[in-house]
Length: 530
Image (cartoon, rainbow, N blue to C red; front, top):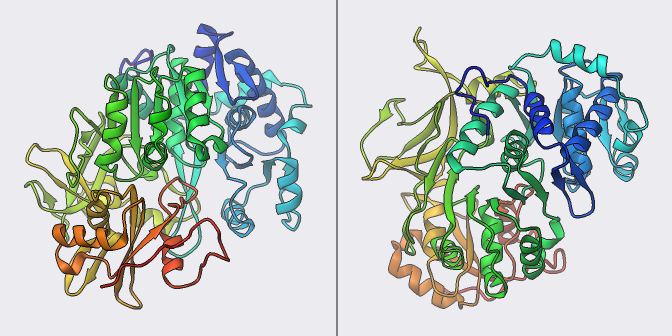
C-alpha cells in the first residue's frame, strides 16, 4: 500500500497509481459488474484506447459528461477521460431529461459519452455537443505518444471529476475536485481502515454520488478488487446478500439508507455476509436500532461512522463505533482525518470550543474541492477565507451543517442549517424529531418535514406500529411543540438519487401533490388524530 506521506512515494496524478497497480497485479481482477470483469491490465488498456479517442475531440482540462449506467465499461470510460487530460462528470441516466439538459448547460461540454439509447432519446435537441458511445470510441486506435504528451502537461491541481449537487436556486451545481485532493484523502482513508490488495470492495453508490469515489480510488491505489453491485439487488435483500456472499465481499462503504434497507427488511435474518470485515457508512444519521442489527449479525466487524459533504472530497471526520448505542443516543461523527482541521463557528464567526454548544461545521486543510464549476459567486460564498480580511487567513469550506462537541471531545452532527426550523416559538432540528420516532418500537425508518405554509410538522414512518401508538411514545420523549401534528404510516421510504431520504417526496405527499394514483410507490396509512 502506497503511503503518500513519504515524499518519494507521492504521485500527482491518479493514473500514476493505476499504472503502479497494473505493474503489481496485471492479471488480477480490477472491476466486476456481474456481467463484465476486467483485469487491471484490461482496464488500463481500455481506458487508454478511450482516452486517445477523447483527446482527438477535446483539449485537456475539458469537462466530459458520462451518461451511462454504472458498469465496468463506464469506469473504463471515466478513466479514459482522465487519460485525455480532461475531467469526467458522471450523469445518472435516471435523471429527468430537463435536469440532464441543465447539467449540460452548466458544463458547456463539447462531447458526451452516452449509451446509444440515452444519446438518441434525451439529447436529440441539444446542439453543439457531440454524442458518442464508449463502444464507438473503442473502434479507434490507442495513441501512446499522444497520451504521454498530455500527461507531461498535467498538474496536481487539475480537476479529476465533477459531481452535481442540488442548488438553492433550482439549478444544479457541479462540485469539482482535483487529483491532489483525491490522492491525499484516499491515502489517509486506506491507511486508517487497512484496505489492501486482498480486499473485495462491494460498491453500492452510483458513480454520480461521491461515496463511490472512496470505492473507486481505494481500489486503484491499493489493488483491491472493485465489485459493482447491480442496482436491482437493493430491492430484493435476499438476492443482495447472496451476491455479497458469492463475491466474498470484505468491505462495505455504503450510504446509511442502503444499510437500513437491508436490516429493516430482515435481510440479515436470511443470510449474513460473514466475509465482511468493515462497514463504513455516511450520508445520514444512522438509527441505533438498525446499527445494532448489523453489529449483532457481524460481531467481529469494524463499524465506522463517516461524515463530510461532497465539497470537502468525501469525508473529513470518522468515528469508530466501539459499542452498541441505545435508541435516542446520538452517534458521534468523531474527529478529523489527517491533514484536515474541522471546527465550529457560532453566529458571530467565533470558534466554539466548549462542549454542548452548537455551531456550523467548517473544514480547512487539504482536499477541499476547487469549488463550483463556472459559478464563482457560489464558490466564494461556500469557500471563503477565514478569518475574513486577515492576512494570515486560510481557505475553508462552510458545510452548512450544524454540530457540537460531546464531553469526550467528539464532534456530533446536529442537522442541517436548512433543516433547522422555528415552530411555536421554538427552534427545532428535524433530525431530532426523526431520532425520537426511529426509537419507537414498530418504527423502522422515518422522515419529518415542515410545511411552512400551514406551519405544521409531519412525520412519515415505515414500520408495523400504529400511528396513535407512535404519537403516544413521542409525547413521552419530546416537548409537545416537537411532536408532529400529522403522523403518517407509509409502505416505503423513497430515496433521492444520492441514496438519501427524499424529503421533497413527502412534502408533496403532505400538500396533496402526490397520491396513490399518481405514484403507487407510497401508500399513506391512517393518520393519528391529535
